[in-house]
Structure formats: structure tokens, C-alpha cells
Amino acid sequence: MRRQKKTRLPSRVQVDSWRTTYKGIVPESHIASLTYRNREERWQQFFATSDEHFAFVADDGNRIVGFASGGVNRDADETFQGELYAIYLLEEYQRRGVGRLLVKAVAGRLLQYGMTSMKVWVLAENPFRAFYEALGGNYVSEKEIVIGGALLIEVAYGWNELNGLLGQ
Figure 1 (cartoon, helix red, strand yellow):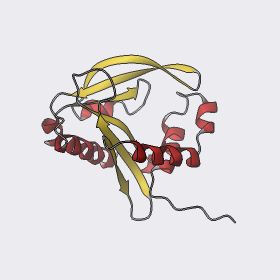
Figure 2 (cartoon, rainbow, N blue to C red):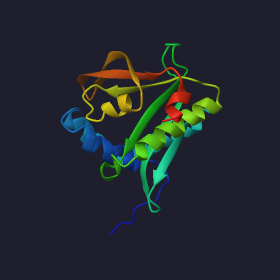
Figure 3 (cartoon, one colour):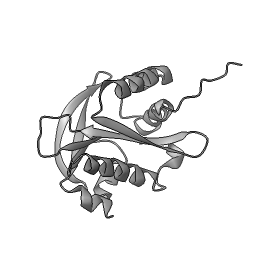
């Protein structure tokens, strides 16, 4: 039996979350192509390339069960200074308040960096899209993206004032 390399990167959470959350939304061939090793390499690049982004992880004492990453808004849109790049939780940790804590951690860090607003892009068909609305995010816009050869719609939610989000 091969022993698995232990990592503190959120690679497993990202891949496993895609497999549960995006099943039936993103082409199965794309989901099947995701590997822990590939995601780990991308996370190493993420942390090595810039000081303008960051990530928070949630763990259960034994393993990472969720993460959220954020930083400077990557779009040309100057309405929102910061961006919640990604948030993923293992299925069994969803709807327990962990996601809310992770989003607040990202918002708090953005405020520390002097950014008072934030947006997030989410697949329109994501079954957890209402999560952002429950946190006070307002619909901002949408765009088409291609994932695994499929044309999908992403929706942006924004917070004009992060202090309000942190007060929830």
C-alpha cells in the first residue's frame, strides 16, 4: 500500500469539492481530469507568485476541510477593490458556518490591506449561489466562461462595504 504524502495545501478540498458541487454542471471529463497533484502544483505557484493574494484554511484537527482565497480584484472593474477568488468546503462540512467564517476572514484581510469592497464570481448553476446573497452580496454582473469545452455563465456578487459583511 502506497502512503499518501501529507500536505497542508487545500488541493484535496478543491478537487473533491469540484467533484461533488459541479457534477452535472461542468463536463464530467473535466472533473475527472482534476488531480490532487496538479492542484498542489497550482497552489505552490499561487503562493510563490505574488504578495497580493492569500488563503485561509479550515481544518478539523486532522485535515483541511475548507479554504477561501482572495486578494486584489483581478478584473478591470474598479468598483470593487478586492476579490474572493475561491471558497470550497468538503461536502460534509457545508452548511455548518465554516464558509461564513472563511468569507469573513478574507474580508477582514482585505480591510487590513485597505480594500473596503469585494466581489466574487460563482457559476450561475452552482447550487450554493444563495450563500453569497445570504451574506449580503448583491448581484453585479455576469459573463460567459468556458470550462472543459462547455460554455457556462458566471455571476458576480459584490459587497460595497466590507464592514457590513463583518458585522453579520
